[in-house]
Length: 115
Length: 459
Image 1 (cartoon, rainbow over the protein chains, first blue to last red):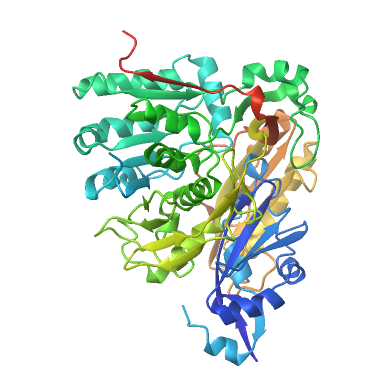
Image 2: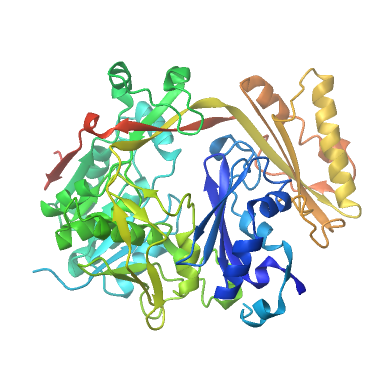
């Protein structure tokens, strides 16, 4: 096991979705995807983003793309035009999630090329 | 005669995107269709207000300026254009386009208008007929905010666009429609796809989703940004579609950016909800169905997409007045930038309170930009002692005067706050309207769409 940031084994993009945001997490290898499917749970994401998101976190999976899609249901300070936050559209939430530290097995790291 | 491959590009991801995208798409490589998206959720509300003041306004004027720059090349290369630039006044947009076209010696270019999306004037009739327009997020009926509604538009599908092209249009102007429909419409027209060919409609929808934000699938807003070559002259995306629904995402040779499985995945997840059910008026596309494969440099092939029949409702985008907000900012230099910015914020709130203006926790905001605002709560190195910061403060609420009062207490910090306060620009922050967004549904058979083609302007 090695402690690494999520960015080592995945990339991400985020944007607004009503009063919340979505964060798409793209595994950098099939092994990384299998690892993330098991360990990057809604509870883990919710805890990491707790200051940014006040609502629930919902996860969807797209195996064909090796993607996990997270909905952060209350992360924009009102959302759309009603928000006075700098990041009223959640554009930076993907990068925030990529800062998450994880204990990743070495065989996953070996099978996952660095960016 | 139908071509084997149809090239459809998107040159505008939103109103405000660079005009170079579409100009270069027409200039720098082969193309059959140029699509352009100008409408965000609040844009139509702004357009309704513009039209209320001026009957000739209420559409995307940027589009007319663009056509003025590219019309000769569009004609020479026979590139057709599909744009939702009509806003809430497509006939005024059409008239402005004919004036531009006449100056270029093309007075009879066929321009189609797709109408029926704007239901602002029909809301009461539709509500009386049983449509509640319940908010999709909260379940509340529209009656709660009916007297504050400023725009109401149905997201129409791709078939009216195809019909306009069937009738010979070279430029198709729509109001609100789905973004992917701008791409799907030309494919339906070219390949003769039927309303019940859901796998093909889903493929075209997925293609439209991939290109709808312009350069976001060709290396823009990309995690591994150092790998992207020549962002300055980034190529905008081109779909090369075939009649069976398979397509390649690419960009013109020699342009900047890149198209890889990774850049395409980045856009596929953008603004995604449930990937199993991507709802449009034309089909329900399954984003877990297809395969992505790199097919040479800057080419990604998408195949195997599936879809199922659509629901019997359209989504409706309704906007309404939801209060006021004001935001302003100052720069605070070091030493002790963070501590001084915190003091500044405290001073502003205390002065306002002294004068009887108190704002609740959900009505006010202070952000110290430079000290980890975006990733608040996450341990970020260096955030505790930045050399300088931007103090950004804002308030919101129903009372316009109270929101305005805030704006007058920010600037005085320059002389009556701690030292090193600067960077004030742009005048006192003033209250601006909050336009609330109300997503709802309407039964499809209550909505009538109209397609008309014109070959000359009104004298």
